[in-house]
Length: 516
Image (cartoon, rainbow, N blue to C red; front, side, top):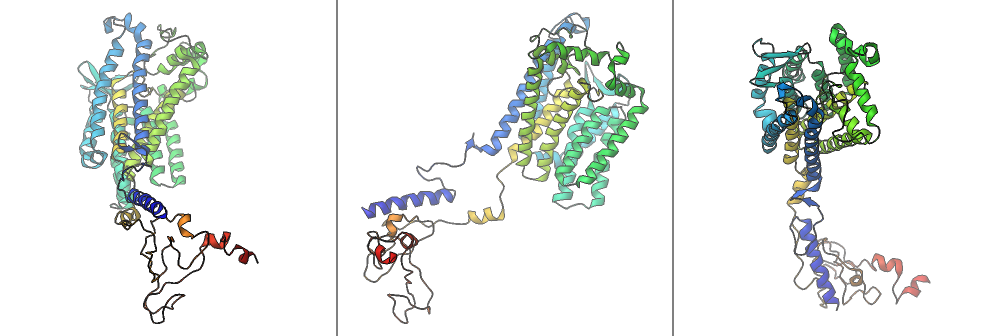
């Protein structure tokens, strides 16, 4: 009976040893949860992020159709097609999905190092092309688009991706690789990041510049820049932004309108006030999907800059909070992807892409609610705009690429453990004591479990047990012999007396002696 128990315990030890050594054993239960063959710690944020992007993009198509159907139905420019803007957005969504898929399937290290120079040159050329009179297109006092046939391209949207990749590459080279000095880091940042920002600001596009600047501050904090330095740069940036805005009549009017939109009801404050009416009409649950009144030519740009107001009117407070909750979930998933990134560049790319999306959301929502000046920045994934949805999907593809490349972190200790080997137990089930008269004990290993029943013999310690499963204690040649050892013996077994269990509880034979 005891031998069967020993064999059973030895089999359990063998199974546990193989599991610890990374070898799947027969009947062994996996302790690490996996999703589609990938550890859950990597796959869960990836799937959540992907689902949030899909939900927001499809929800955007629905809201664009609802907010633009009336306007496009009465316009000859849209061929009186109520689904005109929704169809175009679907085309842009398909293009952006293909771009995101390409970015996802290629290691992000290629984008942030191998292809970075070419990407940066193309971006700068596109930004410079805006100022060419034959290509640039302007609106609302700014030149931000390049006309390509019936489509218009906004290079500043794609410059977001370039700036994030450049900043992540330089941070990796300086902070982790130490391949460049501080002076080189500053010069390269001024050229690689500063030039695109200056070109975007010169359009002028203060909204995109502000969003990118805030994103770079977040990336700098994660890279390890001192907090006081980041606060100082943020303060200087805010002061500079105010100075530039107050010099421009158009931007100055937006700042004044934020404090009192009713001062110019039918002028500068009209759009903001109509947005307030939309939120007020929506109440808690909204007037119903598709039943907005403000989209009947009352609210300008209802399907673009102010689509969040239409959501508030048709779906109410519940709809707006639900939309923000999906963005919050996307932000959490992006943060987890950044946390599990294999290096600093991956961490900054994932955090930068996700942070830019969330910051742009807050800029739009804050402007629509009158909390900050209007900047004209759309809601990511939801507002109408080809360049916007494509760039957002490209940012998502980069983030997912970081998640795809992420692996379990391997330290020097992990590498050492991989070289360990577990000894197989002896064939006879390992009883510890070979049953001979010479007091010899078989060699055992730490991994072998020793059940309590096998440590005792009939409830008491015996110097010569018949079913003892304790390994012997050996000393090197020349050590002092213990009980049962012979003088001059090169190898002796030291009897340490009763086991810890026996000393604490006492056996049936000597319990009374111990109490006395």
